[in-house]
Image 1 (spheres, one colour):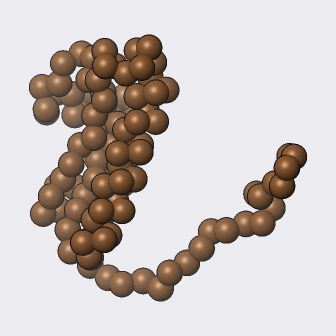
Image 2: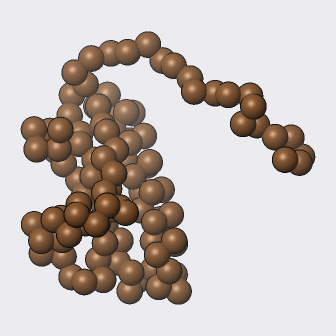
Length: 104
């Protein structure tokens, strides 16, 4: 999908710049950035798809090679952006069994 998309973005984080050099903070920051990119694309009438990279070592290794990333930079996700190929009815995955009020 990414190879044929009009625009592809690889979201990366720099472990050296992450809070306390913690991978978990890097992943949270990059995930928030991906979600914001998806929302912005939707607001512009574009289609976008989050493509997982981390923690798949073979994907991380290949993207580091293709993009010549320094050792401290970790590719977290790819985003394919373009014109939507189809329009689907909205759906929900809401499951009330997953909602807990005031205690588990």
